Structure formats: C-alpha cells, structure tokens
Image (cartoon, rainbow over all chains, first blue to last red; front, side, top):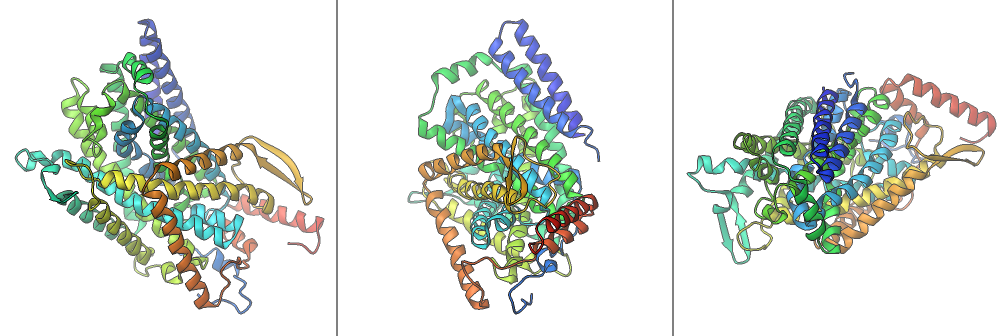
Length: 51
Length: 534
C-alpha cells in the first residue's frame, strides 16, 4: 500500500513540476521534479511491498 | 544467569531469545517510521528557526548522512538479527567496553526520544485546547517562578502520556505494533495530502529562492540546525532493535531500511521546501510545538479542515514515536544486560507478558525525570524552554552510537567475514586479509566521516548535550564497573563468547535456513584452509 501511495505522490509532484516548467518557474519545477524522483525511488523500494 | 567457571559464555546464552518473533514487514517499517516519520512534525519548527532560508539544505545534509547510516544498519541488522542494534554490533566488532559506550549513548537518546516526542505530541494536542477552555491556549496555563516559565498543564499532560506508554509496553509488543500500524498508515496518507495540496495551491518557489539567497543563518546556526535534523533519524536503530522480533529478518530488514531512508528523506525535504515557500521562518516562533499545523493552516480551501486534522495526526504520529522510544530503550537495555554490560536484573522478561517490563519501567521513569527537568529549565518569557532543552540534548547519543557502529562495520568485515550478509553496503573494494577475501566498504568511510562531522557540530553547538551526554556515559561506565566487580568479571576485557553457536542459533530461530547453510559452508571452508583455527 505504501508503495502505491508514494507512487501516486510522485506522479502528482511530477505533473506539478511540468506545470511549473511550462509557466517558466524553473526553480520550482526543478525542486518538484527532484521530489517526484525521490518519491518514485521510494515507491520502487517498496514495490510490490505487500509481503 | 549462571556463568560457567571459565567465564566462557555458551552460544545459547549469547543468542538468548525470549522475545517473540511477531513483527511483520509492515510492522518493522512502522516501528522505524514511527521514530523518524515524526521528525518532521517535531523538528520542522526548531530547525527552520535555526537554519532560516537554508533549512532544506540542513535537512538534506543530515539526510545524506542518514542514508549512509541506513545502509550500514541494513547490512548489520540483517546479518545479526538480535535485539540490541548499534550496541550489539559494537560489542561484536569492538568488544564489551565499546559496546557499553554505544549502548549507553543510544539509551540516553531513546529516553530523550520518549520525553521530547511526548511533549511535542501534546503540543499538537493543545492545538485543540481553546476549543475546550473557552479560547485559552496552553501558554495561558503557565506559572512564572522567577525565570522559570512552567507550563504546568502541558507538563501534566506529558507525564500522563509517558505513564500511558509505560503501561502499553509492559503489556506487550503485539498491542504496540498494531497501534503503530493503524496510526502510521493514516499519517502517511495525511502527509501526502498536505504536501500535494500545499505545492499545488499555495507554494511560491520565488519565495524559496529569495529566502535561500537573502535569509541565511550564521555558520554555527546552520550547524546547529543540521545537527538537530540528524538526531531524529534514530528510527533505523529502532528497526534493528526489533530485529529479534522480526519474521525473516534477512529478507525484511534491508528492504525496510532502504524504503524507510527514502520515504523519510522525501517527506523531510518536501515539508522543508514547502515551509520555506509558504511562511517566513520566524513565523515558527511560538509554533515549535505544532509546526506542521501552522503550514496546514496556510493552505487555502482545505486549510480550515487540514490544520486541525494535521494537529490530530501530528499528535498521534509523534506519540507513536515516543512509544518506539520506550520499545527501543527497553530492548537495548535487555540486550546489554544479556551481555553483562548492565546488571542481569534488566534482562528479566515478564512471565505474563513476555516483555522486558523492568527495563520499560526504569527507562520510562528516566524519561519522566528528563521531562520534569526540561519544563523547570529557565527560558525566555512567554514560552516554555522544554522543547529547546530536549532537542538540544538529543543529538549526542545518536552521533556517538552511529560513529561506533561504522567502526564496527569495518572491523566485522575483517573479523567475521563468515556470517552471511544478505545485504552489503554498496561500493566495496576487495582485499585479502589473513587468507580470507574481505570487501572493504568505501561508502562506510564516507558515512563515518559524515557522522564524525555531526558529532563535532553537536559538541560545539549544543550547550546541554555536550555536558549531559558525556556525564550519562560516565555514569553508565560507573554502573558497569560496579556490576562487573561484584560478579568478579573483568572491567576492561571482553568476555569470551561462543559467537559461532550464537550465530547458528539466531539464524535457526529466525528461520533463515539458506543463510545458515551459507554460514556453515563458509566456516567449513575456513577450517579446511586453516586447520586448528576457529
């Protein structure tokens, strides 16, 4: 379950990062995409996670 | 525990396991998450006040070292799945006296963990106080005794909370693990919602850039802030503390540790970046007890619901963290007593509940005393000094313990290359030592240097920890010396122990049959290569 929560969080952060990039707020985009990558890696560490 | 005349501890004593193996993978993660996940709820305010616009960097610096400590613990806890954590690894690697120092330092941190997190849990709980007291806040229930600003209601709540935790833990780990799992799951979902809503609705990256460039702390304040950030990462210790009660530890612990490192780093970075782009760092003054509720209250649309919801979840998750402090301090002292580092009185397991009830009560009692001391410490007008004092005290034990654990990692790679390591820290150099192939951990050296840096920062910048920490360790050494003398055991020498039988027994009890076969094969190969040596 935690893997799925973190994956969803990573997905939303990535979408927000892309939105910030399109609107020209590159610092925000970089931070959000960095966080989304961290969320994706966390999700990967737990996937499938349900032992 | 009867000691054989030659002082040689047989394996069944060394590997003694009266604790039940009933912690699952999710339970193991939650024990760790309970300790470190609450960090952000506790430390966000005090770290941001210290590190100002560079608060995310303070979290990142601590997080990188935390990740290396996490990998080190993943290797050691999966290889040596016994209660005791860092103390046990140090004992195996460096001997009894170093094991005692590591154990004492970590027990100190766990007792502060109980105090600090219980106080902060009620800081969040007191968010709701005006609802029940016709608009009065916790600070309104304060007695001024000279320079002591005694928040008596908050103190009473904290004392009651610690007593409740002692009762829960005397009853048994099964109750506590279930308690952790339910509340921890709710907390993860809620943290995710707050992070996403904050970034989507109100976060301004231009404020982050501005704060980063123009609101920088002094070097010593940054060092203080980052050393505060590392302290709450003792959750990894907690995972290794419950290793003896974890099913299939060789499989579960590495995965749990790595997942924990990544997910906690994610939330710590996300909340600190969100905070800097949302509120000015100085706005956390007066909100040290409920910093995440402050952030949630600034989120439009959902803020009116999110703030009280965050306060409720914060109170629960931080209270879980205090609970994991009780679990860890009792397991650690249980382990120390088993190895004659503490009087065997601490190793007595309750017949009724199968928990180390005596240790739970003693170290819960120490936490009570620390809480009272913190509330009675003089501080600035208009606020209690309790959180500042406890946070300051917290870092010494973790950094001292982690430093010894890293040294033990190196020593054990050389001294004990036979024990199967289901997980190894990445980046190793292969060398030959006494005819055995040994993998030297390069990342371990980086982790060691990182922890050493933070220990130096703690000594330089933490005014209470640099006095209380060494005094606590000296007191433990005194107790150790008296106990060893009474039993006729050497004080500075390491007692001989049958680690081979102990390792076999631990692997057998943990049902790690593949590791057991690998261990026997490695030993057999070693015996054939070097006959006459063990």
